[in-house]
Image (cartoon, rainbow over all chains, first blue to last red; front, side, top):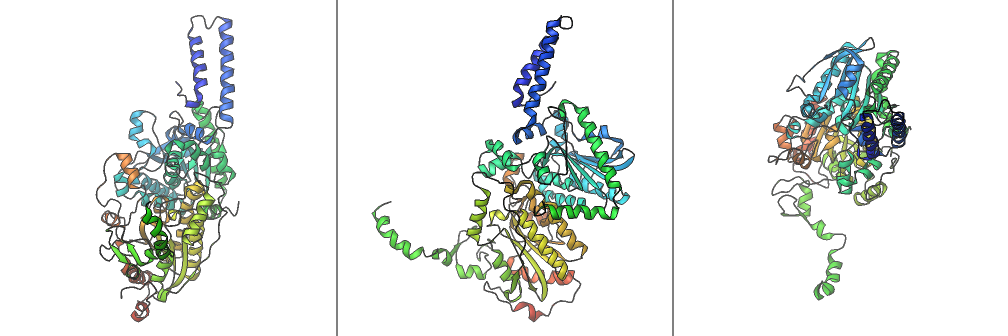
Length: 319
Length: 301
């Protein structure tokens, strides 16, 4: 059962008509009904194509946050074989908002790390909606160091509204944990390939996305602050999130244009949640290509490649 | 408005409005509200003599109060392309920059200088909270990189005074990537085995705390500074409970193991000199060389 977003109302209506028709006792025999269903289905495709062709940044945010969108665990299960989850930061706790472990991408052993938002009320609470605490970032940094020690490439899946703003998180050094995780990203000498699959929320995202290659899904977003947060600070009105989303230019398409993102993966029509397997397969294909590209690069040069990328990127003078 | 204000005001204004001479005579403590004579205030390094509250200090005043004989030279850095995203909220980003430049007299939210600190050539970077909340954008990234490059070239220690509301929203993701970008700079210091000392001042928050400002070899904070990732208001809204007294203040962070020490402004110079000599594995400077510098701002000796 698909959850429709507010701008997909027409689709929802047509879909319920289709269901009604399909539910009729003579739906499989009557030619009229069959034709009607066919017509409605092609109409659905048209509407979807129109809606998703040139979508506003705010709508992109809604799609990026769609509860049925494939999450990190879906990608890992599909893409990584012999997945062996590893837990804990060795200091304080296991943070379930960040998953990670060993596995194989193709034949190559890799370390995989990602934010997990959960997909039911219970699992969302358990995963804290993908908002990590310091322990999550410390676990991520620990796994990156493990990868570095054994020369394993690192794949990170980014999908978080941001780091968790809680009392305990602050007391245990949320800022420091994020800073160290980013630092670890930049000091390892194995390639890091990051892919933003949904929300790339601020510091909580960059702590794991300071990568050699940054990929985004077509309808994912990447921003310094949520549109709602930005609206409430700059417009003093959180209802101005549409304006804020426009101004922040947080879409994959725009970020590719200014060179912050290296690659954008096309999603199935109507977003990754409408054809999960197709989305998972596309991501797998791209990650394999990237992995092969890095296998040809001397390990000594990997770290420099990443540092130079960031030194040159931020000033825009090189774009 | 009554007849008195109509009549009397122009005259009084004429006397007192000469570029805010009332402000230059007296300063009101932001914490205990006591009135401090301006000269006393600046001699006390903008610290309230009654309650020890540490108030805003401009980068220039910092440099003057820290470098030997108050002598230093500014390090220039590349200006980034202005407003590449064409950002506009209720006001244009370019206008916000212009306003900040006008009111602070600075070109951006950070200043970097080079000078002698206790006889050792040192680079000091100082964020200016009055310039758009000290926010980190491309310019701050450029400045830190430039300062670090100079430090590496001269084998100098790098000291950073942090003060920021976080990343500059008007540069969106381009400000976010300053987090890894400045971290690369800090890596350059580490590889060159040069001391990197961070002094956290009120307030340091958001993406700045979550990158270069928490990666110092030694982490110092001024008393009672707000230091956090997420601000107290955001946390209260999230967890729906009131936060304890002193939460996210310097002393609280010290208690929770997030800092090496909390030091009053008047002792900072001596402490920094001691640290850079220790970290650089050098004998202490000759005492006479480091105490006589009494800049315009003065310093307790």
